[in-house]
Image 1 (cartoon, rainbow, N blue to C red):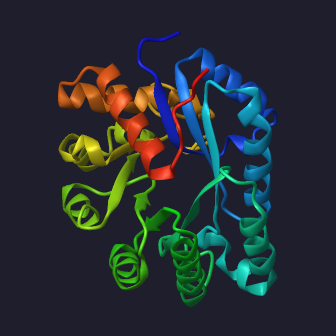
Image 2: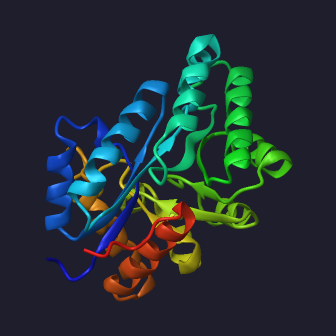
Length: 267
Protein backbone atom coordinates (compact mmCIF):
# COMPACT_ATOMS: atom_id res chain seq x y z
CA UNK A 1 0.00 0.00 0.00
CA UNK A 2 1.45 3.43 -0.95
CA UNK A 3 2.47 5.69 1.94
CA UNK A 4 0.17 8.57 0.89
CA UNK A 5 -3.52 7.73 0.92
CA UNK A 6 -5.78 9.99 -1.11
CA UNK A 7 -9.52 10.74 -1.33
CA UNK A 8 -10.93 11.41 -4.82
CA UNK A 9 -13.60 14.01 -4.12
CA UNK A 10 -15.13 13.88 -7.60
CA UNK A 11 -15.21 11.03 -10.12
CA UNK A 12 -17.57 9.19 -12.45
CA UNK A 13 -16.41 5.64 -11.67
CA UNK A 14 -20.05 4.50 -11.53
CA UNK A 15 -20.06 4.86 -15.32
CA UNK A 16 -17.07 2.51 -15.71
CA UNK A 17 -17.66 -0.93 -17.21
CA UNK A 18 -16.77 -2.55 -13.87
CA UNK A 19 -16.95 -0.06 -10.97
CA UNK A 20 -15.98 -2.76 -8.46
CA UNK A 21 -12.75 -3.38 -10.36
CA UNK A 22 -12.08 0.36 -10.34
CA UNK A 23 -12.62 0.45 -6.56
CA UNK A 24 -10.35 -2.55 -6.03
CA UNK A 25 -7.59 -1.05 -8.16
CA UNK A 26 -7.93 2.20 -6.28
CA UNK A 27 -7.66 0.47 -2.92
CA UNK A 28 -4.47 -1.28 -4.07
CA UNK A 29 -3.01 2.09 -5.06
CA UNK A 30 -3.64 4.13 -1.93
CA UNK A 31 -7.19 5.36 -2.47
CA UNK A 32 -9.19 5.85 0.73
CA UNK A 33 -12.41 7.28 -0.67
CA UNK A 34 -14.29 8.42 -3.73
CA UNK A 35 -17.37 10.47 -4.45
CA UNK A 36 -19.51 9.22 -7.35
CA UNK A 37 -20.97 12.30 -9.03
CA UNK A 38 -24.32 12.38 -10.81
CA UNK A 39 -24.77 14.67 -13.82
CA UNK A 40 -28.22 13.63 -15.13
CA UNK A 41 -31.22 11.76 -13.77
CA UNK A 42 -29.85 8.56 -15.32
CA UNK A 43 -26.28 8.92 -14.04
CA UNK A 44 -27.56 9.97 -10.63
CA UNK A 45 -29.57 6.76 -10.46
CA UNK A 46 -26.45 4.83 -11.45
CA UNK A 47 -24.23 6.65 -8.92
CA UNK A 48 -26.63 5.92 -6.06
CA UNK A 49 -26.98 2.27 -7.10
CA UNK A 50 -23.23 1.70 -7.45
CA UNK A 51 -22.39 3.48 -4.19
CA UNK A 52 -25.00 1.37 -2.39
CA UNK A 53 -23.48 -1.82 -3.80
CA UNK A 54 -19.82 -0.92 -3.25
CA UNK A 55 -19.99 0.37 0.31
CA UNK A 56 -20.38 -3.08 1.98
CA UNK A 57 -17.94 -4.69 -0.47
CA UNK A 58 -15.20 -2.14 0.24
CA UNK A 59 -15.45 -1.09 3.89
CA UNK A 60 -11.89 0.28 3.67
CA UNK A 61 -13.13 3.01 1.29
CA UNK A 62 -15.37 5.98 2.00
CA UNK A 63 -17.85 5.82 -0.89
CA UNK A 64 -20.92 7.97 -1.44
CA UNK A 65 -22.86 9.57 -4.28
CA UNK A 66 -24.22 12.94 -5.28
CA UNK A 67 -27.33 13.76 -7.26
CA UNK A 68 -26.87 16.36 -9.94
CA UNK A 69 -28.06 17.86 -13.20
CA UNK A 70 -25.13 19.26 -15.17
CA UNK A 71 -25.72 22.60 -16.92
CA UNK A 72 -25.25 20.84 -20.27
CA UNK A 73 -28.40 18.83 -19.45
CA UNK A 74 -30.60 21.63 -18.13
CA UNK A 75 -32.86 21.67 -21.21
CA UNK A 76 -33.53 17.95 -20.86
CA UNK A 77 -34.29 18.30 -17.17
CA UNK A 78 -36.83 21.05 -17.77
CA UNK A 79 -38.38 18.95 -20.55
CA UNK A 80 -39.29 16.16 -18.16
CA UNK A 81 -36.54 14.45 -16.18
CA UNK A 82 -36.61 16.80 -13.17
CA UNK A 83 -39.45 14.94 -11.45
CA UNK A 84 -37.67 11.58 -11.74
CA UNK A 85 -34.49 13.20 -10.49
CA UNK A 86 -36.06 14.67 -7.35
CA UNK A 87 -37.83 11.37 -6.63
CA UNK A 88 -34.49 9.55 -6.65
CA UNK A 89 -33.06 12.13 -4.26
CA UNK A 90 -35.91 11.62 -1.80
CA UNK A 91 -35.75 7.82 -2.07
CA UNK A 92 -31.94 7.45 -1.84
CA UNK A 93 -30.77 5.09 0.92
CA UNK A 94 -29.74 6.80 4.13
CA UNK A 95 -26.09 7.78 4.16
CA UNK A 96 -25.47 7.08 0.48
CA UNK A 97 -26.52 10.47 -0.91
CA UNK A 98 -23.99 13.02 0.36
CA UNK A 99 -24.38 16.04 -1.90
CA UNK A 100 -26.27 17.83 -4.66
CA UNK A 101 -24.52 18.43 -7.97
CA UNK A 102 -22.58 18.70 -10.02
CA UNK A 103 -24.64 21.66 -11.02
CA UNK A 104 -24.02 25.21 -12.08
CA UNK A 105 -23.52 27.24 -15.23
CA UNK A 106 -21.49 26.62 -18.38
CA UNK A 107 -21.46 29.58 -20.76
CA UNK A 108 -18.45 28.23 -22.67
CA UNK A 109 -20.28 25.43 -24.49
CA UNK A 110 -23.86 26.69 -24.01
CA UNK A 111 -25.24 23.22 -24.71
CA UNK A 112 -28.38 24.29 -22.86
CA UNK A 113 -30.19 27.61 -22.94
CA UNK A 114 -28.71 29.99 -20.35
CA UNK A 115 -32.07 30.68 -18.74
CA UNK A 116 -32.67 26.93 -18.47
CA UNK A 117 -29.23 26.54 -16.88
CA UNK A 118 -30.05 29.22 -14.31
CA UNK A 119 -33.42 27.66 -13.52
CA UNK A 120 -32.06 24.13 -12.98
CA UNK A 121 -29.12 25.48 -11.00
CA UNK A 122 -31.46 27.44 -8.73
CA UNK A 123 -33.68 24.40 -8.19
CA UNK A 124 -30.64 22.37 -7.11
CA UNK A 125 -29.46 25.11 -4.77
CA UNK A 126 -32.88 25.06 -3.14
CA UNK A 127 -32.84 21.25 -3.01
CA UNK A 128 -29.48 21.30 -1.24
CA UNK A 129 -30.82 23.91 1.19
CA UNK A 130 -33.88 21.80 1.98
CA UNK A 131 -31.80 18.67 2.62
CA UNK A 132 -28.85 20.45 4.29
CA UNK A 133 -26.47 18.86 1.80
CA UNK A 134 -23.34 20.42 0.27
CA UNK A 135 -23.56 21.79 -3.25
CA UNK A 136 -21.04 20.63 -5.89
CA UNK A 137 -20.48 23.40 -8.44
CA UNK A 138 -19.48 23.30 -12.10
CA UNK A 139 -18.81 26.74 -13.53
CA UNK A 140 -17.15 27.67 -16.80
CA UNK A 141 -17.00 31.16 -18.28
CA UNK A 142 -19.77 32.06 -15.82
CA UNK A 143 -18.06 33.15 -12.61
CA UNK A 144 -20.11 36.32 -12.02
CA UNK A 145 -23.48 34.67 -12.64
CA UNK A 146 -22.51 31.66 -10.51
CA UNK A 147 -21.40 33.84 -7.61
CA UNK A 148 -24.56 35.94 -7.82
CA UNK A 149 -26.90 32.96 -7.59
CA UNK A 150 -24.91 31.39 -4.77
CA UNK A 151 -24.73 34.62 -2.82
CA UNK A 152 -28.48 35.19 -3.09
CA UNK A 153 -29.74 31.65 -2.53
CA UNK A 154 -27.23 29.11 -1.19
CA UNK A 155 -27.41 28.22 2.50
CA UNK A 156 -25.17 25.13 2.61
CA UNK A 157 -21.48 24.42 2.12
CA UNK A 158 -20.13 24.66 -1.41
CA UNK A 159 -17.56 22.61 -3.29
CA UNK A 160 -16.09 24.34 -6.31
CA UNK A 161 -15.39 21.21 -8.38
CA UNK A 162 -12.54 21.13 -10.90
CA UNK A 163 -11.47 24.65 -10.02
CA UNK A 164 -10.03 26.18 -13.20
CA UNK A 165 -9.34 29.72 -12.04
CA UNK A 166 -6.30 31.52 -10.77
CA UNK A 167 -5.58 33.52 -7.62
CA UNK A 168 -8.26 36.15 -8.36
CA UNK A 169 -11.06 33.56 -8.73
CA UNK A 170 -9.73 31.65 -5.73
CA UNK A 171 -10.09 34.74 -3.55
CA UNK A 172 -13.71 35.15 -4.61
CA UNK A 173 -14.52 31.47 -4.06
CA UNK A 174 -13.05 31.57 -0.57
CA UNK A 175 -15.53 34.31 0.38
CA UNK A 176 -18.16 31.56 0.52
CA UNK A 177 -18.37 28.68 3.00
CA UNK A 178 -16.58 26.60 0.43
CA UNK A 179 -13.91 24.09 -0.45
CA UNK A 180 -11.82 24.30 -3.60
CA UNK A 181 -11.26 21.06 -5.50
CA UNK A 182 -8.24 20.82 -7.78
CA UNK A 183 -8.09 18.34 -10.66
CA UNK A 184 -5.49 17.07 -13.12
CA UNK A 185 -5.65 20.45 -14.85
CA UNK A 186 -3.27 21.76 -12.19
CA UNK A 187 -0.51 19.54 -13.66
CA UNK A 188 -0.88 20.90 -17.22
CA UNK A 189 1.87 23.23 -18.49
CA UNK A 190 -0.85 25.57 -19.79
CA UNK A 191 -2.37 25.99 -16.31
CA UNK A 192 0.21 28.14 -14.52
CA UNK A 193 -2.41 30.34 -12.83
CA UNK A 194 -4.33 27.31 -11.63
CA UNK A 195 -1.13 25.89 -10.14
CA UNK A 196 -0.51 29.22 -8.42
CA UNK A 197 -4.01 29.09 -6.93
CA UNK A 198 -3.29 25.59 -5.62
CA UNK A 199 -0.16 26.95 -3.98
CA UNK A 200 -2.13 29.74 -2.29
CA UNK A 201 -5.29 27.86 -1.26
CA UNK A 202 -5.48 27.20 2.50
CA UNK A 203 -5.08 23.46 3.04
CA UNK A 204 -8.14 23.37 5.30
CA UNK A 205 -10.20 24.54 2.31
CA UNK A 206 -8.69 22.20 -0.29
CA UNK A 207 -9.88 19.02 -1.98
CA UNK A 208 -8.30 16.96 -4.77
CA UNK A 209 -10.13 15.08 -7.49
CA UNK A 210 -9.78 13.28 -10.79
CA UNK A 211 -13.09 13.90 -12.56
CA UNK A 212 -12.29 10.47 -14.02
CA UNK A 213 -12.42 9.31 -16.75
CA UNK A 214 -11.67 12.90 -17.84
CA UNK A 215 -8.79 15.36 -17.24
CA UNK A 216 -6.07 12.77 -16.72
CA UNK A 217 -3.06 14.35 -14.99
CA UNK A 218 0.49 14.39 -16.30
CA UNK A 219 2.23 12.03 -17.08
CA UNK A 220 -0.79 10.03 -18.27
CA UNK A 221 -2.56 12.90 -20.02
CA UNK A 222 -4.39 11.63 -23.09
CA UNK A 223 -5.28 8.30 -21.48
CA UNK A 224 -8.46 7.49 -19.51
CA UNK A 225 -8.30 8.82 -15.97
CA UNK A 226 -8.70 6.64 -12.87
CA UNK A 227 -9.69 7.58 -9.31
CA UNK A 228 -6.34 6.58 -7.84
CA UNK A 229 -4.58 9.01 -10.20
CA UNK A 230 -5.75 11.61 -7.69
CA UNK A 231 -2.38 10.93 -6.04
CA UNK A 232 -0.68 12.59 -9.02
CA UNK A 233 -2.77 15.72 -8.50
CA UNK A 234 -2.04 15.79 -4.78
CA UNK A 235 1.66 15.07 -5.14
CA UNK A 236 2.03 17.87 -7.69
CA UNK A 237 0.37 20.35 -5.34
CA UNK A 238 2.38 19.11 -2.36
CA UNK A 239 5.62 19.63 -4.28
CA UNK A 240 4.56 23.17 -5.22
CA UNK A 241 3.83 23.91 -1.57
CA UNK A 242 6.92 22.18 -0.17
CA UNK A 243 4.71 19.79 1.80
CA UNK A 244 4.96 16.12 2.68
CA UNK A 245 2.48 14.42 0.30
CA UNK A 246 1.23 12.20 3.13
CA UNK A 247 0.29 15.29 5.13
CA UNK A 248 -1.64 16.83 2.24
CA UNK A 249 -3.33 13.49 1.57
CA UNK A 250 -4.49 13.27 5.18
CA UNK A 251 -5.76 16.85 5.27
CA UNK A 252 -7.67 16.68 1.98
CA UNK A 253 -9.18 13.30 2.90
CA UNK A 254 -10.36 14.73 6.22
CA UNK A 255 -11.79 17.75 4.38
CA UNK A 256 -13.70 15.50 1.99
CA UNK A 257 -15.18 13.38 4.78
CA UNK A 258 -16.17 16.50 6.71
CA UNK A 259 -17.93 18.30 3.87
CA UNK A 260 -19.76 15.15 2.68
CA UNK A 261 -20.54 13.89 6.18
CA UNK A 262 -18.68 10.60 5.87
CA UNK A 263 -17.15 8.61 8.68
CA UNK A 264 -13.59 7.34 8.40
CA UNK A 265 -13.61 3.63 7.48
CA UNK A 266 -13.00 1.29 10.39
CA UNK A 267 -11.82 -1.70 8.34
